[in-house]
Length: 170
Image (tube, rainbow, N blue to C red; front, side, top):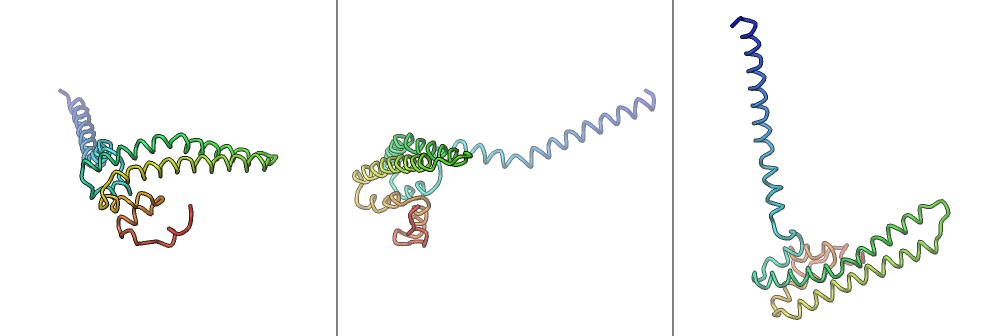
């Protein structure tokens, strides 16, 4: 081999080694992030206020409650989708060059009515579930009747804890 071919072979070897090292470093740096994503995808259900409220229940009761509440949520889904669709349409109509105020108000009313139908279904489902529980289980699960983040605060601070924004309707 000539010195020129040795230099070329050495340069190719160094380039391959640098590429391998860069790949190894990238793998090590990103491995934890990838493992967390995989773990999140494998986790059944979502974590959140409901999970915090259900955490103290017996596993069999917890699963029955989750199943019942999920069925109520699926039954209410079309109402919430209709509410969002009517609101999006109201936004589109309001953005037109000529404002049709009556149409916008009508669409907003449809949106509110659909949202209330959905909330009513959710609340009736929750009350039906509560009716099947013991008094202790009902007391632990009562915060599910609160709206949005209020259930999380009640689970963390007790049912008597109120934040200023809990008083205002949303």
